[in-house]
Length: 491
Image (cartoon, rainbow, N blue to C red; front, side, top):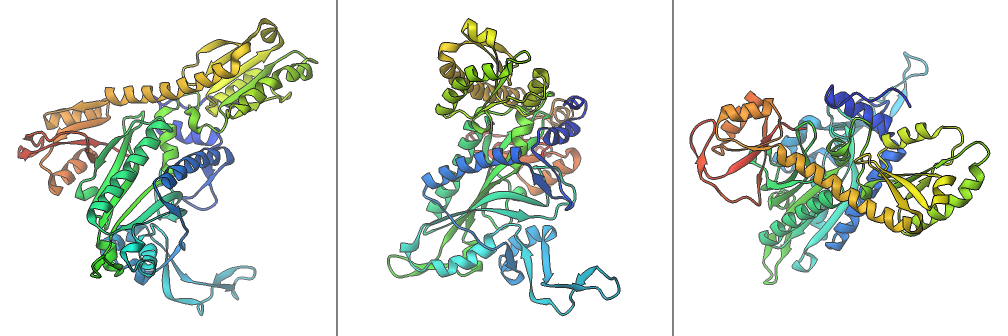
């Protein structure tokens, strides 16, 4: 293997960037600000996608697909949404190139091929979807309309980082329409719960469920709910959002239905989404200075088997190993037998450690003769001797234990880096020291929120849903406060 990764302590950003590349997850592309997701990285995203898609369908949603291009007039229809995304939009103005007469072999935009109406490259799909819903919804019998799409979006970011912030990224976006505000809010909260369950049960990522302040709310929403997670450098990462849109988009696109009394009303809407940013969360929450640490439920390869042999012994050893490989596969465990005879075991150990494979089995003829198999956990580096007679059961249980152990480690880190403070000096000291979530009273005004952000680079990550109101005073202004907010510096 190549030289060691930068350590998290030395340079967290360099550690992250190098890890993404060396683990074979993604790389920068020829298009500035865009990434190529490599097969190993895409395999993780596919597992995320497959699991989430099943969860969406269990809650009654169906998949559809809408155009990547949005006519500018449609995009402008909901003004707050348009203004919120205006600075990030890529715009198509022409539809054809032609040979440049002044530069042989080069192309230029054909000036005669200007579009009658400019097209916005999808930064989010509310406009194109709600303009379509107008044709789909006529009566209360058409509701609720529960649609999800898996797609790519473009937001013209200038400062990019693989998975965390790129000009183009992959995501899913749900868009639903309901007869009442109560139903729409219930949908919004339900999908937040789906995201939280996925994050905690599959990514092994503890999250805080909360609602955003007006300053941090999605453009065009009445309320934005979120899940917030903490990374190992003490910064927060927004891992998913679910928006109650009220009737804003329904009114902008005149989406009405006839209720049971025949009276026409505007529908109530939601939208919700997670993206390949979850890949960044997965990497930063769990990995170490030797490489990826993957929770077994999302690992493309859950077990790697490495034969330990002397020259001339490989074929015979493989015959004895293959029943173990087949037994694991039949149990539904994804397993790879690394039978390459071009690399030494030490090289293979380091390679699969970098890729975060949860369990490594090193098997030699002597082990098999003794009725044991040596297993190594990726999360703790612990080595274990498993009995050959029930190796499949033992590995299955080990994978469950690793999944839980990774979650508990991340939860312990969050607990240790969540600090309740009473003064602004304490607030700043925590941010400049250990970092993490800082739980504090503030007066709830946009002005105070902006002042804190300007002076400390910390934002209100959320107002937690599961915490009771608590009278106090704002750490900045001294004015009354009815509850604490969770602040952090964030990605």
